[in-house]
Image (cartoon, rainbow, N blue to C red; front, side, top):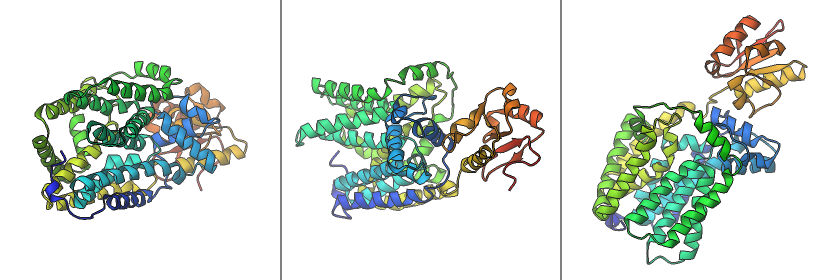
Length: 451
């Protein structure tokens, strides 16, 4: 693979400059609007695993697979050190992890195929909608992706018989793999690709088994207290086949819009052809089979929670293929620039806007609680609101409505039966907050939040 496109290496001479510049620009891009309200999943993470009474709550509680243990532990630590749960502070770590990922990919590609290739790889990753959104969410996906990128790069060093510092590389490989697993169990999928690669190259030795075993054991420690809850949750999830998932996944991995997907897809396919020519046929064949299986197995198993975000770790792989293409055909950089611009433009409408009115609703809850009123929230509004306040009671049954003076809901469609019961009990509701369809009921003469 070293020979692929090497004759076209050009641009910046120092890969570290390419990587550092790419990382800094990505961080500056992602910081824009970092103070906006949290999305539902991020708010749930903060409410249940970060804004808690104990640091250890991050690794001993679970809720429907929404806890990414190691990440929750790190953010919990940041909150305790800074003494604040402001959104910009909560987003600092995921943004940093995303920016470092972009910088590493850029430096790696620049080192092997030239500065132009490195810059294009950085653009593909940084502007990818799935990667960008998850790197700005208070979730563990950017940390998982970073750890997988580091472990994969280190794997290449360990497979190179000429590489030096093999002991340090081995320790780094185990540590990065363990971090990925401790953050999200889906990291086992790309790490299984490492197993297939080693087997395909005929290099399986006891040392590899020890490395993988060590990574699994170390990463698995994060799940000791929550694994039982995860098994129970899995048993009740059901099945839902998503016929369009492979197409949705391809579109998201390649840039999110139709045009960007075509442009990045052409460049990535070209790069794959070049890799195929420089790679032993058996290795390329087995890695292709693994990749197809990694997507097809959960898809055909009708995993009800299956979503493109679980495969965000493939975005850097797409970027590497694009870099290889650009190294061979520099004119393709223009297509990458267009694709990156279109992907960035698709992110613009929600980049700085708050997706939900959680802070505004929480403000009304606190104001009514200060006034001595009994405030309640409908069932599925509880998880995101806990990121902002806990001064309310949860309503899970219509019979509980009679004890509430003020009642709020942030996503009425999630609790239709309770909303209907609230309308009947309170005699109607009013909108509350900014974006979204949050509503409020009250037993007083005027409604809270009328402003």
